[in-house]
Length: 298
Image (tube, rainbow, N blue to C red; front, side):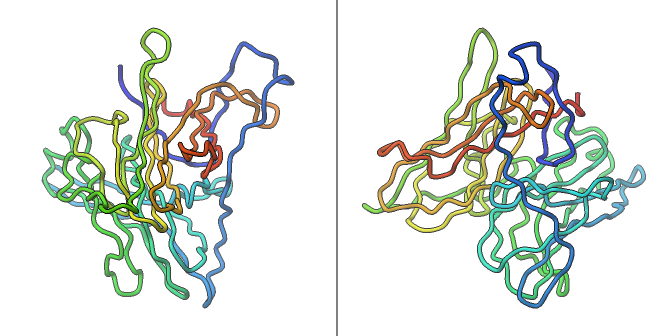
């Protein structure tokens, strides 16, 4: 079965459901991050870019964008290009950056240390080999990163969209204060796989396992603020969510998920819900994030 990749854009179409009735459904919890295109000296600003990459067999058009910030989906204005930008408060952020390359859409959750007055741009480096662009089964092995718009200097590592090409993985913290975070996933019902796993931590992949599945990863983290990239899968749907987690000493965290039908306005949507739980206390340290599953990519 061909997998469909979901990027967390706010322009999504409803998925019809037979039951239960609309009035009986729970309202979906979709945290949103509003686009603000008025840069100022005391805030940072980030936006996407467009480029034409020349190669042996012609050229490839690439458009990069920001899809989510700190677990909140970007509210792109109606009809706006995906390269539009938004303001960021100075400080640490978990950002989902993405690229459109033909029909291929992939996102990577990264950590950005935003500075006041700075403008950042999402960049993509595409391969120059035309055969590789057109024929590689997993799509172009494009590298994504965030750069300082004025200097062109990369402020996040160049991460491959295909995690099997990662050159450096997350290194577990050591010592008695190290906390753990673990992924989970499995088959529900007969053959339906659903899961939510940690794919990146602070600009490093957690695994080089092949494919776009959800991996049973357990990572050890030092106390403090971390940018956690979650990859989720609901049957053939795949997507990423960037989250900021304040890690407590020796804590134990688990990425949890649920699937169901919820109400958004006057429509029924199939949704995938993600949260992070403190396993010792049962507290939701990252509350529910509902992801509407988008039928546009079918």
